[in-house]
Image 1 (cartoon, rainbow, N blue to C red):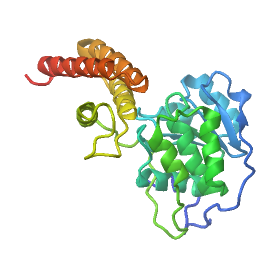
Image 2 (cartoon, rainbow, N blue to C red; image 1 turned 45 degrees about the vertical axis):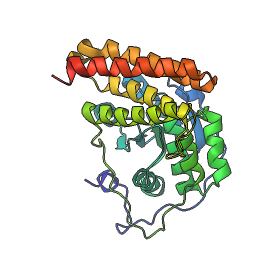
Image 3 (tube, rainbow, N blue to C red; image 1 turned 180 degrees about the vertical axis):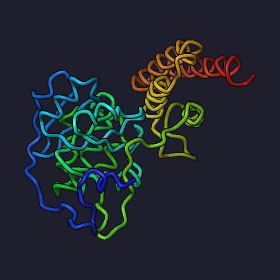
Length: 298
């Protein structure tokens, strides 16, 4: 379903050209969204922040005049709450490792066509959400790369999330006649099995870094050990959010413990303590193996 047309906003070829006129860019904290994490007003028609919870938060967005909410989190958006308050969701889930071209182009379509004002959020509104909002702002308001990076600085986006900074700084808007992805209310997100498979690959990257003395391995010079540890930590955190109540009972505590070990690994790498890092890595691998024996390899 074309959400733009369904919401009454014309898509290109349906009576309205894409928005291309620059808007005032003056990022500032947004006190009217008190209670929502990290709320920012980026332009008169674009806000970013944390996930809205319950009718009280959606009512605050409604009072601001927000018409379109964009979630880049992996959780399914609360579509019913948004609809009760006269808003529509667009779901463009991304990870902490960057914004793939498909997501950049979907966010471009949001910036050019979606009915505003627009509110962009991730989970806590500090890393992925501001990065996505910076893409929307470049597409809709014509801000430059430095201004886009200023959004990340303002929101406190961690420098350790190098892929987010890279893709915001390197964003090139697609041509106005470029076909852009269809926007959906609730995208298909990774299953728990897919999330765990991705974690296995990242753990393999960590093993390569360990063998290279906790430096980028010669065969994979693009790997940054501390960032790989961070991605494992965030991956475990997000995977826990995918757990069903039954799975949470079975191995939620084990995943939480593994997340803490991944945080210890990241800290050790950043402190340049290779022995400590190796000990944490080995503990992390043991916890993964033990969990697999109990719950996967039956």
